[in-house]
Image (cartoon, rainbow, N blue to C red; front, side, top):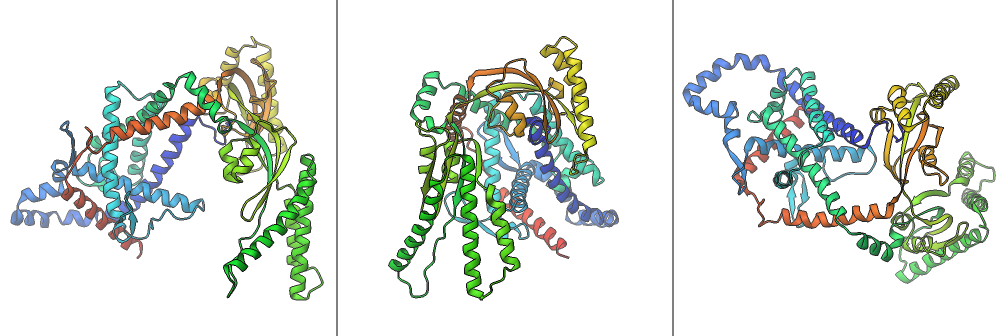
Length: 581
């Protein structure tokens, strides 16, 4: 449990995706429950259906009610003869819709605003824009996106086959977990997987089609990542060195503190000219910047930086309080005044610490002038400087000037505190966990004291589900990875040597840490360049692969794909109407 979660990267990804699928399936299950309530009515209606079949033709009912029509009708086709049935296209259409809904809900949940899609409005009743900027309905957007998705998966799947690429164990596990997630949702709703799929995606959609679609999708996704890595590895050492030399500041790290002194973008008052507004803004900026310069002059180390910011905040708070008192003619301190003062005092440690910051991160948080200064080769620890933009000012303090890092391999054995999730750790729980960790460490020291014996001890005792099976190994760790800070601090201590072992406490428990390898040749800047350049090369590969006149260009049956669109919208309209009752 070294990371914010207790699982490996692959397991974390699978868990997150499994939760996302389960969430979508629950929503679908609610819709199914409504249809189940009419199950007995449907049984009674069989006789009526048979009579109708005699009148209208039994063939018609077999064609529609059994889904044969969906299976036989072609929605798309490719030059190699592969056909995409209406049933399969309906699945991709529904999946595209579900992904959009989930993304919209995620943004809302984390307070990032709206994606533009309103989940309470039918897709054919709200608009978006296509890649060319043309206004289209979301219903049409889902149709064209589904077409693109089918083409993308087809192309990557065929490329993967041609390259002899196969899913690894993680990929196979993801396929199984996706299918199992749908099977579990079906069971909760009282359905078999096959019946559940038909209820969600149409009578023509079978369990076999579903499994094939899931497997092809996973192969396509994993092959895309494989191809990016392959292209990244094709970059020569000479090319890597040249890129680093030309753009070193983009690949180094720095540690620093900064504080942002927020100004105000003034708005024109009634009848105020542009020139007058500009002059007033310049005056306000000049006043703020002069105050910040005085703060900057007091900074000689981190402590004086914190103290100078605290003094500024206190003075600023007093000025606001006096202004408020003058406006209201109140001399006594109000509850609001006291609250403002308390908030200012709480902010005395609000300089922002940034560890292992990149140039882009500082440029984004502050501005390019601050980033250029911070990554200048002349920088020394303890230096500080002030920067301004249109209305704000910044003071930046260097803790550690630009540096490089490399990967390490670490093993660990985790002893959890034993507290319930969300509950504070008691002293007794803390002491018990530490006691166990010390006992395990003593057990290892009384044995062979090798990495192999540590690995076996991890498999026997560790409570980190994400690494226990591979002996607690976290290989290729980088200083920017999202491990908890004590775990990172120990692993990347400059004094660390292979074979070092120590107990480290984190929010999850006590970790017995074992330093396995110091990969000094695996420098981060090379890895970053390979990743970035691999992405660039992959974009070119993908552009050629998906060209409109390429071998994967599909023939689309517009009439059928539009029918899928319209039928889906009718279903969504119906579900929204039912949920509104």
